[in-house]
Amino acid sequence: MIKNIVETITLHNGVEIPQLGFGVFKVENGSQTVESVKKALAVGYRSIDTAAIYKNEEGVGQAIKESGIPREELFITSKVWNTDQGYESTLQAYEASLERLGLDYLDLYLIHWPGQDKYIETWKALETLYKEGRVRAIGVSNFHIHHLEDLLANTDIKPVVNQIELHPRLSQLEIREFCKKHEIKVEAWGPLGQGHLLDEPTINHLAKKHNKSAAQVLIRWHLQHGTIAIPKSITPSRIESNAQVFDFELSLDEMNKIDALNLNERYGSNPDEVKF
Image (cartoon, rainbow, N blue to C red):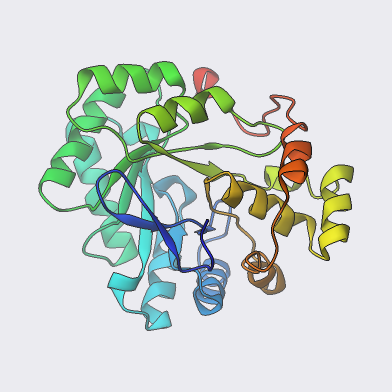
């Protein structure tokens, strides 16, 4: 169990990733992204998760530059979008993301969604980038078990990460167990249930008990399960409080009570039904 925000866990290829990162999904490009990321970096976050489709890579890059933090102390993730899937188009999409970010390399590059029929070809482009030393680690996002089985059977390098919608209402136990068996780390997007769980009675009871916010209890639940979490916020006070989760611990009974909230309820799209 990590003890502070800069502490890392090790991916199966030996690369270290902070277990608690900062996400920028739906953060508007420009000053909103720049100020949010700069605040996150000032608070102590060192992992920033973006994507081409978020259309805020430029803002992330500007914040990194203005922060003055050495590049090697940061862990930057981006993702290839569905319309860029395919071998050559993925290589081009990677270069475009680097240019928008103003960086020479990414720490982690993900296939954003499995899509329909190109993710094997797309993955082989990611393998090329990795073998050439252009990216430190490669992974996937929103992959079900059958997608992962297909990928593992038809490619050379297994993903280091599967980033999925994960929160107490959608515990994804089967995927988590599959990933654990194959040494693939699980990373939670929407770790707070996109805000839907902030009023949940059990979470708020535990928050009151520990003198913490509901968001802090949810983040702590993820960390104690060994999940990589990337909460997002554009509110400075919440960016800061979301990082203050290392001075309390949920008991086994409390973890079990949160686990029991699962309803297999998604707030995002089902990867098997994605049409975009």
